[in-house]
Length: 181
Image 1 (cartoon, one colour):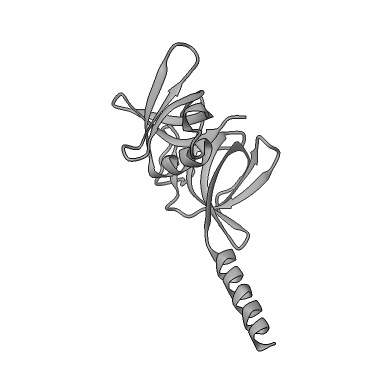
Image 2: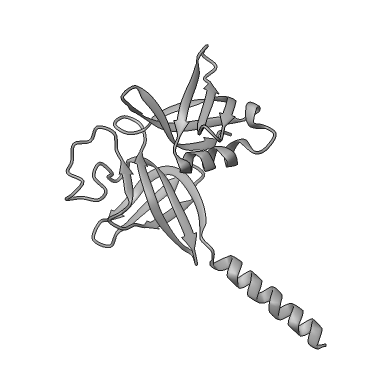
């Protein structure tokens, strides 16, 4: 009886520790609302889910060539209706954004296609666009993790993906990679 109770107590404590850990993820969607004073942004994803993200002044924001002053507005270049990619952690039901990237017109570029190669050591991904070109992108640390989730082990060269990237001095860097359906 005591062994059974000890086993259940150990199982419960292990489950509680696991539930308290941060879970990292990323989504793409449209900004539904922003509360700059409360440091909250609400994003509707393409699958219909609504996420409420909390952020700090240290959130990384990539908006392409938007000229607003980042020192005056943490979410410079991000407004209601803006399409964004958000990297976040979830802990205890609270989602905290660590990176918010504007997608499209004045933000991250998009390439869709089939993965030809992923080099996790070199942090690169090559994507066949289906239009006779192969795009090779460097990946940020978060994008490397995204690519691993999107391609899965053993199916890397057949995965359909969408990569969101910046161009700096002619070099393309993926900030987010997701599996295309």
